[in-house]
Image 1: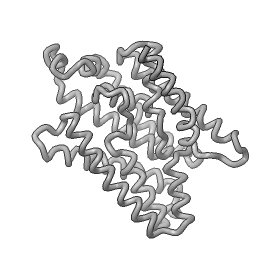
Image 2: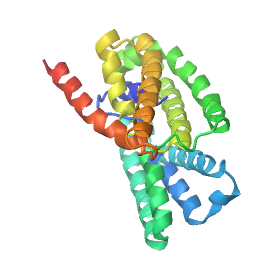
Image 3: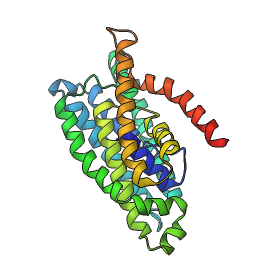
Image 4: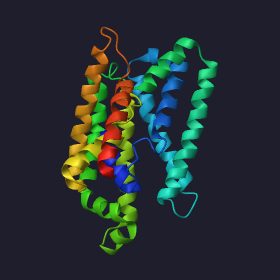
Amino acid sequence: GLGLAGATFQALLRNPLAEPYILGISGGAAAAAVTVLALGLVSAGSWVLPAAAFGGALLAILLVFRVASVTDRSFDVRILLLAGVVVGAFFSAMIALWFALSEASTVRSAVLWMMGSLAGADWGAVVTAAAYTFPAGMVLVALARPLDLLAIGEETATYLGANVEQVKRLAFGMASLITAAGVAVAGVIGFVGLIVPHAVRLVVGSGHRALLPLSFLAGSAFLLLADVVARLVIAPAEIPIGVVTAFTGVPIFLVLLRGSLR
């Protein structure tokens, strides 16, 4: 779902460098996960860590919208971005505090989780994430035409009959929910939500009716391929999947960027 969320954020923010973690969602999930690890609560069951990460991600979303609502322009793109920076900085400080107070083994476990991995994901976590991801994804696909208009500009979208504020509120909420579910299952995996929409856009164009579902499928395929590589490179050990996506994502993004500038 990170590819789908990334394509949505890029349309809403009209920024090709936007990605699913831009509103501080990953910070909230990571802070909650580190808290659970530092307090030793993972011994209560395998479900505790993903549940805490999902709750932390939702808390981050609520805080971002709460901070943004202090102004009269709560869904102004610039206000949301600033709120995301503030909330992300708060959670980063919280993580740093836990690292300073925790043992080395706890810090290592937290860092490995933050790099992303599918090793700890079981079918229960996958089904739970899917229960949030698929309905939210269907809502976003239904918003394809308004997102096409928003990608052009808010004034143009309003002129052509789109309810801009309602579309932004719904799309931000659904994309954030998808991101929260993904982080809860696999940790913080970078570059999927950034490069996948770019790659799909080069193939099918910028129309969101095709871009959104194909970004979902391409993102899933890319993540599975990265997981296979992560398991095979130094088998029987496994490297964090976020390391694989970063090493492959950087050159791919540079190639895509170069191609788009021609």
